[in-house]
Length: 435
Ligand code: XLS
Ligand code: NI
Ligand code: NI
Image (cartoon, rainbow, N blue to C red):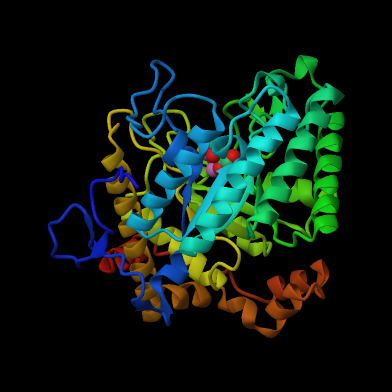
């Protein structure tokens, strides 16, 4: 079989290596906090960016060199890509992947034909999974590229479109199940609005909830028991997307009785587009017991869109891993590199460099986060900061058994509370000790 990536399997050479095709920090079997690094990190590669992203931007077409791709919509071409993708996974050492239905197989003249194409590719993916041990982290349906979804899918004003989307999701969930996928994601690409002048928000949200309930019913019917993930993003492509951030998603899921089956899949670039830090979004999800998985990338503060860059910022990966460790690690989820190369990095080997960088950055983030936790000073500071609530009265407040009158009495008998320092700078210095 022809090989398209001009390298052997990427190995670990340690921090002193100068080899750009080696890991300096990611050492899959090395134990960190009692667990192999690969089991903490659970890296996944997205089919759409690795195999299908031609690297266009709003001002110019694609530049990516894909010598394996004949540019056609044929099933044969789709099947060829599977071999190339698995060559990539094997060489980079990534054991999970994610797809949209339309990344792996072409959308053909009608739904039935598209389903047949999907079945053919899924059969091949299944073979490759068995051969390599690679697992599907999650599947999803592309409900945003085709012009029919211009007004949304599960929030389309047109029931004909809604039904089409339902059929597509039904099939995509079945394919996910066929591949023993661990989860299934809903990113509402166009589930939002461009203007409220033409939008009945209440009806759209009711429809979306009904859609998700039907998805749960279908999953139950076919015995797919993995979690569904909602992936928040505030805007782009729509002006306002309903799943704008973690809090908005949680509110939606609670309001419509969907908390049991759903978790959140949080993406760094989406968090920052929503005006939050990723650690804020992770904290919101974890507090609700609802963090499922992560789309690991980063944005660029100088560019206002979802640039989907590879995570290379050690401070950022450290913050993410602090949260993942605090949660006790992933169960069904992982770190999916929903990231693409820059338009200028158009050669196949740039995929290798990009992923090596992301994996090393997360390996360092993991080791640093584990060391900060092991050290304990940061956690102790936070614990101490709230310690007045560990008093008898504090505990009463936390148990919801206190009253304003009781607190008034306490305040009257108490002297002016002493202002204590939050020590932000000291804590930032503490974190820097470990970088
Ligand atoms: C787009 C999203 C998308 C989802 C999957 O911004 O991140 O890639 O992860 O549909
Ligand atoms: Ni994503
Ligand atoms: Ni994104």
